[in-house]
Length: 345
Image (cartoon, rainbow, N blue to C red; front, side, top):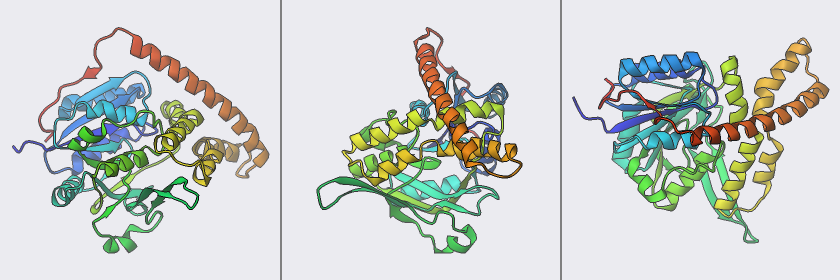
């Protein structure tokens, strides 16, 4: 059997209920040998038991933490276990298609790319609507000398069927962490992922860092995957979802991005500040309002509920910080590592 050259690192994104479906798709549609490291950040009991069962069955490495994780924190935990030339970060709500992994590796080997992103789709039905097909992420200097960030995602919302034939492999400036292949040696130059980027724009920071040391980022449309966003419909998803998209984590991430890259606090940032909590409003608060108003929508009720939402969010964020500190200070055995094999085939 061929020795694997790639490790798939699966991490939680914003909820846990899609995790079984995502993991099953990886095993159903990956035809080449691979290693797999699964980072489980405090998933609910039924998901934890599912992952333990699958780890024993498929012989992959499972790392369990009994507190919720920042995305880059989870990725770094997985990164520390990688000993292959390539790795792929995959969020736990991503569904892959046949040949997805081979296409990413082919691109990296044929172009020398440090980072390769797929044709990323969104929503259901699967693999029909484009979320991301490469993009722009660079710093430019305006007429008065301010360093400003340019961010643009290509083809979002367009039909895969109508546009896929026009998409070509090409060098780009941006790839997203929903699913991204990385040449492991690039971390020798940039260090581990920045854990001060708590919950947003960490992919911008990563791609800027890679390109800053001479690495290239490519878009590979031969790889098609879909991330499946959704409301936290299960109780086990709700707490993590609210924390994952917390106001404090978002502000801290934006401030880190601005200070790290010496960016002007321009309209890009002020627009982000004004939209704090928009995911929670759309996924949690708005559905509650529609139920309470029998399908109508009340801006006044929205204002009241968002007032409570912001305060509850601050409480959950502060409680998490204390719990994480307590857990990390406990003298306990190392994080659970179930058996790992050279290949999961």
